[in-house]
Image (cartoon, rainbow, N blue to C red; front, side, top):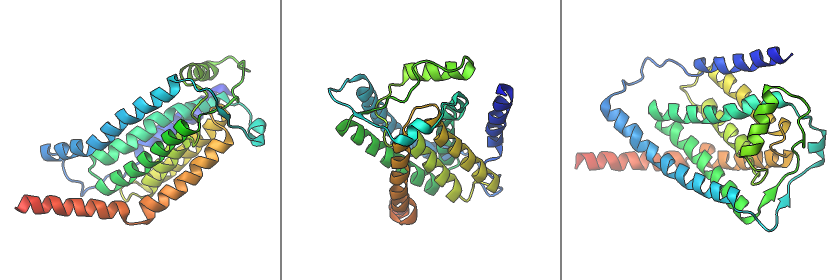
Length: 253
């Protein structure tokens, strides 16, 4: 059974190579385009420093009072250690799609996804700062002894059961799926792959007892709000077009 589970998740990850269309109209990776892509990376690099510094402070600073996050549904969800695989895959999944849009110079896709991610992650930091929270869902002892329970044990040692909602694993998975689904560059097969992997990651947060169903529900609620602002309105596109127009005007002058 364990071998079958390994093969299942391995096959899911291998499918990632077919996620994006081969675009014959894609411009060559010139020196100028590389420079432009690196300039586009500046905002996310700056935000990464801010986010990691703030999050680290939250993790190492003990609070006098924590609000426990728990629902009755949490107690009915079994512990399934195999789901640690998609949980860890999240780190590569989110990074890969962001960097793909960046270096393929898909400006609209990139800035929409970036706006979605940064907005939600900032809300998470503010919530964790103002309302420190904790969960007690993790098993005290592992029910089985295998490579996956060892991975979960390592995760528990490196990540405190605090600062949980809305779940960033869930929120960012939703964001990356929306980014892939709405992108013209991503193939139909890629959209399906993104949807499957995002679903597995979302389920993993509950099956390995990293998050309560409340964390998941609030991530979906926040994702819906930010989706309407970023993807259904012309806010990001309008700002991007005005910036491009100003750049062209400066170049002419």
